[in-house]
Image 1: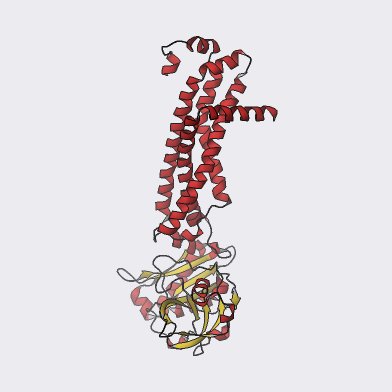
Image 2: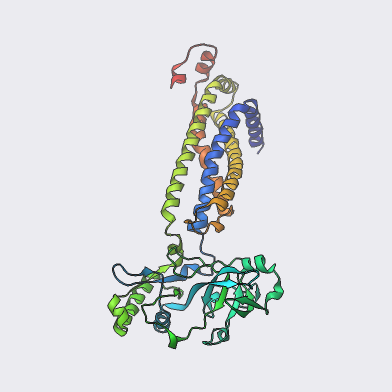
Length: 422
């Protein structure tokens, strides 16, 4: 530990004597590490982090296809979902929802809001407990009954001033007054693929009150259907079961026979991010090359600086410093440069992510999940260690393999040696 502390202090003094070299090297590394850390944050938040629901890897979304040139959407008929629920052995539960745009407020202050019409059990399906009040009960979902309302957390804060007493009151919406029974948790967001039909991540949630006896023909698909697999079931098995149930629907209903219904179930996470995964991975590969270029540039700087210090290293060797000691000095300088590059790179990454939050393209989902967490910090440190190895390895080996006599003899000459040229 004493040798480590001494080497660290000497490396810091050596870098302080050449501030221009240190600043250029640190800035070069910071750009490479910062870019990689920022893009990894986006990739991690969008692609790698699970959806914010309990056991989200078991949640699927149902697609119905109606032949060439017809519907191919995550849109189903409510009664089809009822049949899936009754016949499935691999799914634990299903839920459906649809969307509308309604006017919220009186004539003096109206606004159009996205409304989600959902079954009782919808919030339980996604593991969301009410922040205030309660979620929908079966009695709220009775056909012909009075609908109940749950406010999104953001609408509750924006329009109702985060007043918890709004629960139990009635609010004017869609030309009538409905009772607010709860407020959704702040963390709840309904994540959907880009092809989602009607349904959105709503600001107001209303109980569906579906009447099976008053439904249009089965080729009217106005609902989004979700299914949760039983523990141990796979999506390959679920797909086979859905295909079997779709075959039975074709036999039972002329609409599905005429349209040659094809049903499939997709993992919700894969369906949500499918439009962004390739782009983000290509971008991640591109910034990895930025880091390699930065390491090559810094390696050049370190090599040139090493040549200018050849006489110093030779003198140390002549005075008894072993090869390991000389290598350790160069490695310590590389580690300090890399650590400073990581620190500055993280600051650059924070600024980049703030810009992404404001300017991020709408085609990239889950940008609100992007943040500097433990995984990102570990990646930044790993990138710093890799960088130190990449740009410090060759100079370190050179420091330990030079001939002291040759270096001391050539140190006072004006011409270049063959080693300098190499």
